[in-house]
Image 1 (tube, helix red, strand yellow):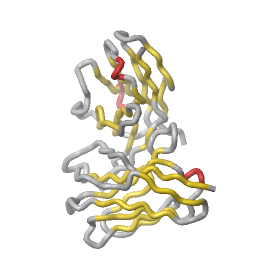
Image 2 (image 1 turned 180 degrees about the horizontal axis):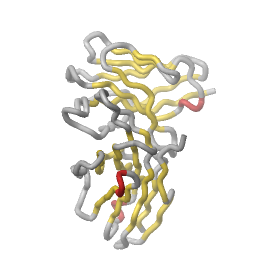
Image 3 (image 1 turned 120 degrees about the vertical axis):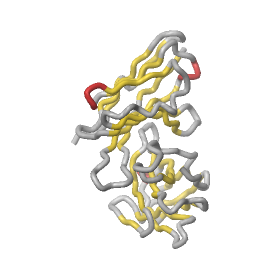
Length: 117
Length: 113
């Protein structure tokens, strides 16, 4: 079946511009996560959605970052007034928290490489 | 989530078994041990996870020490495609706390032909 897809695969923008990154999770997955990976750095958690619950925004680095998930499916990560330090690969993952389970497997998309000039 | 310690890098030859160690001396009784790997220019992919007993799947085996303070990911026959960064991650049950995966630096595995 189809995996997690992300678009665009690459995005080059100028400092100060806003960008939107899209994630299409695996159909039926209730949990959706955003991470980012800067050059030479590990993966850093940004935000998490689970069903209709309020999102866990504890990983967002600043108020320039926001995300929404419409209809419990597609998610958009928005970065306003981009800075050069925002340059990174932004990864989306989804998972299905099955009834009775206590841990989940996350399925990652290929990522969006953002370059801020 | 408790911290894990992995070697920065390891090398292997094709067709040979690979044992990737992970120390997690502060693991709690409810922490699961997850392994993910990240191939070059790709997002991470799930490999295996376990709680107390050893686990096998089509990709690998996970050997968990009796005291759970360490574990070993075993690739039975390494291929060139197995060259990746391997992450050992502890994760509490999601009905208690913690949702995101906390990635460390992982082990970079090189495989030679």
